[in-house]
Amino acid sequence: MPNTVLITGAAGLIGSHLCQIRLAQGDHVLGIDNFNDYYSPKQKRANVATFADHERFTLCEIDIRDTNAVNEIFENHKPKAVAHLAAMANVRYAIGRTPLYTDVNITGSVNLLEAAHKSGTEVFAFASTSSIYGKTDQLPFVETDPCNKPLSAYPASKKAVELLGYTYHNLHNLNFTALRFFSVYGPRARPDMMPFMVTDKIARNQTITLFDAGDMKRDWTFVDDIAQGVSSAMDTPLGYQVINIGRGEPVLMKDFVTIVEQLVGKKAILETPPAPPSEPKITYANIDKAQKLLNYTPKTSINDGLAKLWAWYQQQYIG
Image (tube, rainbow, N blue to C red):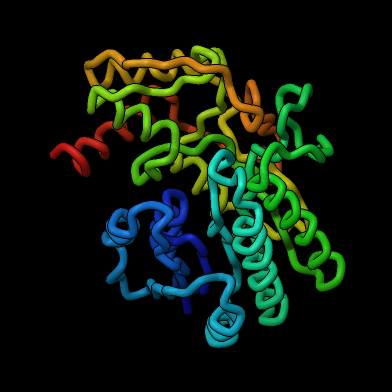
């Protein structure tokens, strides 16, 4: 009898890759997605198309804020593990939209936590974010940092769910692992993600906004590595843990753009304003804890990962 696992945000960048990993492991996968129009629902449909008809995949088109719908899924299927990836994302888009981010990211997460503990879920893996670290002076970013100064509602909402996860662990013995993702990229990327935007705008000869002339650094982590880290967390009951899932190799944004230029075969058209207050100067993951607890080993270099993103982009948008 296959294990049943539940993945929210199943049609997204990470969720769709994670669904494929868990199906390949023999699980029955419940995928939750509401296919909202924050970005193209058509792209999300394409993300799940390769496995939508799999005999062990069940797509549940609901909103995680719908308490009754969430409860019904947990009561009927009793998933052994949950990977909660669904959220309103994007640090900058969150500015001025605090009520929306609170509603989706906090209220929706509490619906899932409540249903998970009542139905006997063994492990709850939560997609948190490196944005939680804000403008910390501690490099590389390590999980013991207090992270009490989020720069927008997006990381603030993620921090709130990390704390609520401890509440459910303390009161209900739920194994809760918060995974702080670092600058995820790869095939099936959202159009608002920097790697997609840089690739798309260079290909279309459009102007790219590159803050601080590209002197900022990001710890780019390929989607397959992220998804493997989440999958490992789903299989590993750890009580309560917060774990960085990154690559541990920050890349200058101007070097990142140069790699994409070489792949596309065109020069970028740049405008270089100062970075807004929502943007940290650097993200840099200490991944010692992930290596120790989850046997996490990122394998994809920035050059190889961007080549895979470019190949997908050509197939989807050019070919």
